[in-house]
Image (cartoon, rainbow, N blue to C red; front, side, top):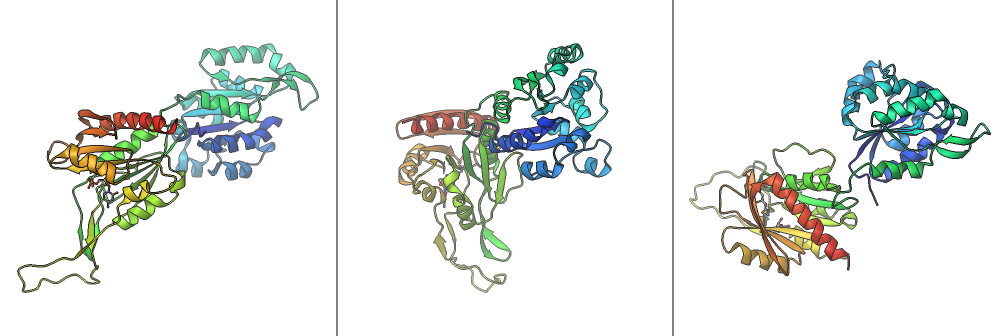
Length: 403
Ligand code: PMT
């Protein structure tokens, strides 16, 4: 299970023979879904090359505190703020001593001083160095400051000694790291969400569209990320910034939204269709701007667009599929009809006749409908409502997949 999805982890590597294990640790953290940035002390580079860690982490490796180029990219303060957790593995006796005395004489110690994220250390050193009174005193100081220690393990050491001081195996460190985070209701799940309107072009300057702002879909995407999911947001044209920690695919037309939704659908556990997709598009797109003629009435010929959520729900195997129903009358009745016709697992009925909720407003009120029950969620901000909806969807998803 991808227990570290959306998590941003700084892996600090200090000088010691166990540094070679940091390559495997980087691979495991990435495999668990984390975004990993590696920071190395100068002596760590004597044991393993930054290039190896850059290739495995997929990010540039940070080496120096006073490097103008690196600071212009992601400086030590930005790195410190970026991290959800700072993991130092291996942590040498020297590094622990510097950290315990509050020094900030290189990038890694400075970053540890500047971060508000939890810090975890995986000590690695010779057994005599570990038992030394100085190291033991430093360990106590660090623990009192709330810094967590993973290990060290006991066993045979690179120098031939046997005793405490071995760095734990990468798998154990990766698991301990994941244990530091609370598990969300969608941890390890992949969620696709459509949001916003579509635009169906008539000519190079005109299109058919609607009033969807994307706020509801974006709020759902953020709530899903917070619940631990890996999110792909397929967005029509909206004036909202790309949310952090998710993939946003920008599209214009219904056809493009369909293609982006079907891409990698086999990876999708839950599909949520919050977009307001144009049901029809012009049969032809004029190459040039359509000129005003003498006739008073102009006829447009439209053809039906593919139904994205119904296409997704007809897939085999099908993700848990959730639609919205935007209606101006007989809201619940029409919503139930769409639930059945589109073969959905849940539908969220949205009364869009009101100006204080629905299209383009900051608030919404909906009814969540399944084949057997309906539950009203009262008016709230779209963000609050999204949190409640994600919890309900996660609950229903688990019930549906536990059989
Ligand atoms: O974007 P906001 O301003 O925040 O507004 C939010 C919202 C009102 C747009 C949203 O809450 C909402 O109700 N979205 C669904 C709008 C809609 O098009 O509903 P519908 O009843 O026409 O469609 C039913 C379902 O089929 C929807 O899940 C829709 O995404 C999907 N659909 C419709 C047509 C189509 N060709 N493909 C689809 O996937």
